[in-house]
Image (cartoon, rainbow, N blue to C red; front, side, top):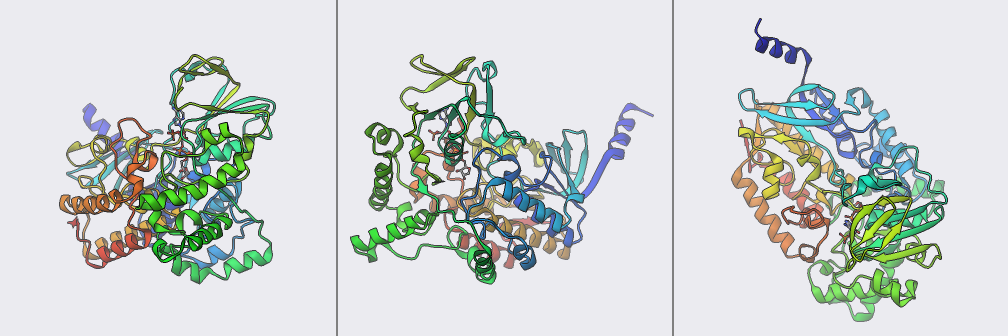
Length: 545
Ligand code: NA7
């Protein structure tokens, strides 16, 4: 027997054959696995994590919690699944959310089809066999008809940020790789780099524990106070009674939340506008952002007026001019960044053991053994450095996976030039690859994720079902279909102020990443309508054979 034949035999022996491989066992992956199993497919999910949860497995940093209301961050396809779980508060913390994900996996008996602690290291489309060959870091080879990525939009951490990180004498941690057993910060000198939604949750939480806290602030954030009441039995019963209403409403609003833009700026007097802003501010949710005035995303003057409303709230709390200068944004409009909800975050900076260090004009140059060094040579001595420095959003999970499509083309290289997808559901040149939570769909950012991920996975299930019924085995976005979607996406996105503001929403947080608004900004309801229309019409923009 020749060496080649031996290798082939061994590969076949160890190759697992599937109809569909789902990458990820978080919100999308669990539901996708469930649906395809119900459809009768031979399907399995793989996850690098040791258990289910996705985002809620990895992000166990201090203070991690929802800022979608718990009763809308839900699966809505099964009334019993919804009603048999009771949330303890409006915006629960990560441990409770992770327990809920376990509940979902157990209830649907999903774990038996999930391989944990296993990373996909490559996926190659085999043109002759019209199937994917997928390899893992445990040496497994999987031969699958469909490859479905449910890998999350914020799962590729930016954790190697500074020169010298490996030389630090203390402990350095990225927020999304926080150890399961926690980290003892008691009495320690702790530094936090980053004041996005994550950094803010960390800062307001660890401040009670640490000896001293040094916060490195580059771009300040507009923040809104969170109102987070505990739920008693009657509150739980009240939201459960709304199940049908929520199931009807959520998929059709602008952002997949229960609320929507109700009033137009032009229709109201200045006093009425202020009253409306005050009313939604007091709601203590993302309502001021996602249900005040849609014009804040398009009109610079209206954006400025609403921004000023929020700035004044922040100034009233910060009081001190130095802190106001450092922490109140002025260079971009409210809502063009992701808006964090917080609890006494601004008040943290009044504490004696907290130092806010501006690093816009005097940037961090490197990590030294003692701590963080700035451009002017100052060293902030620390024992723990928390990197709340974010993610390669939307694309990073896939570009780190080694996906190669037709003719060996590399998704990493393709998206390194230009980030294109067909409705965020597939990519031209990559047959039988279905995607979720990638760019050019609302699930890339501007969405209550459960709403969008249910919709996308249901669309994928329907497409596969359709193919099987039609006797088709390969689906791929056409070049023309994709180009038309990209054009529509860009036209919609480039009309927004989001497109003009630097943040992970446009990929500017990753050096060299092609700039494009990641999220579809036409609205969750509109996206859904278009996706359903596409399926009803027999999938124009996709070629099937
Ligand atoms: P974000 O929102 O991307 O925030 C990252 C933060 O880290 C942000 O304040 C950055 O400042 C800061 N950063 C990154 N690199 C540096 C360097 N080199 N120096 C100083 N500061 C730096 O990530 P999050 O994890 O907070 O949130 C991501 C999403 O998760 C969030 O939007 C929610 O949807 C959940 P910058 O703004 O770049 O000046």
